[in-house]
Length: 580
Image 1 (tube, rainbow, N blue to C red):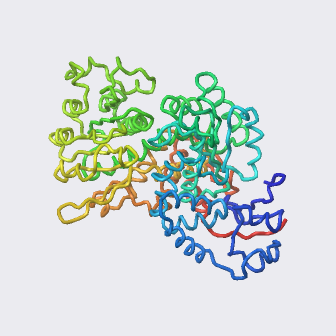
Image 2: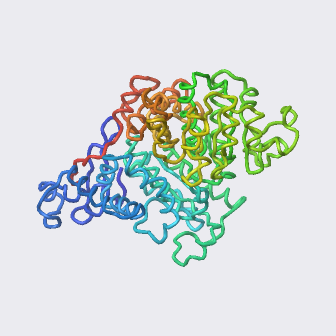
Image 3: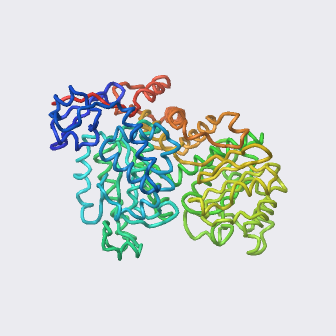
């Protein structure tokens, strides 16, 4: 597992966890490698052994002391962007310390390293640039994709997060800046699933940008060209996919932040060729389903008894509809009945078979003749569909702030004792409604979850907690479960299993306080439960194989699967280093 010039070699235990790093270099080359650099934590023995004598102050700090010191520096930063830059710079210097700091207070660091701060980091990527991370493909080098990826084989890549930079959060096309999303997601893979940072690969598929501001910016670092489209775009993606499969046939490829028109096509095209999934579609669907399962516990009703309306038919919205559909059919409904219970709306109103122009919208388009109450375009509006369709679950992915109005919500509350309402659009200012308003309009009966974090809402002398539908509860567990089980493909049932596992981790006390989702502080333990559920589903569905990253094989053995999931996870602690 070495390569010319890599200077390091990883040594693994039987479970696939790194137990030691062997170095072929000494002195400055050790300090410059963020995978092995310990900074002031190098022991006196290590300093002598690795040629570091005289390059560091005499005192030796523990990792815990380093974490405390860096937390003080972090807290003194004035803005979230400054905090983001500091964390990324620390990662570039010392991976273990960066993750140990992150682990010390996940709830404090999550909004910095990922949403909402990462959106600004994407938009300012070129001006904030410090150090390149990951792989950048563009038309000038895509034909060398296989040889470029082969340069990372010494890191035993297990997960890659791949973006074409077009559908970044709520801000759209950010060109080469989308790589920041990949970096953040992979830090969450490490934090939740324990996939060591050297096993993670961020990939930017730079096919140009239609962002005029970026194209006119003299400091822009991406490929200065309008976005490829049609056959040119498809050919580019195909060349990457072939190269990735050739070099990393057992690694997970997570597609991230593609535009809605490409997200579904790419996911479906490579469903069986790569071990891949799209987090915007499937991860969003699964975490929303988890919140729905929790809501059903409070309503004391079955999910098959609900009528759903998803307002916003992009990748996230249709992904949620897909996951609900999958859950309904798994619970015993016919496909026809499951579709009958799901309404989707876009900017033109209710999607029907005569208005669904995009292929991915057609699956949940209703035939107008099947809806006795549909007689005019007025009947396709949000309030009308809620009323006449007798909707009990309202989900927003529209990016239209305030569209869940008091009239809409009060109409919904007339025919369901506990309306389920999820304003999921990010960032906060794009939420379809504010939790405080939803509780007020439903007299406290509404079951609410959001896409962005919201503070608890005071309600009748107590605090009503607002759970966040954060995909971080899903994708790290999907990744770990797939890797540990040796699954050959990622099935829709994996996401239903993940959703149930997340919902089961919400304690009754938290449910009664209003939160439909667990606390992010429990991320690592939740991820283990999700991974076990996903791996078990792979075994039960007969798509499991052998974990190629471990000598401790299980081959359809549930007990060994649980042991492997527990033992193959890395935690941020300094590893023994040894010269070659």
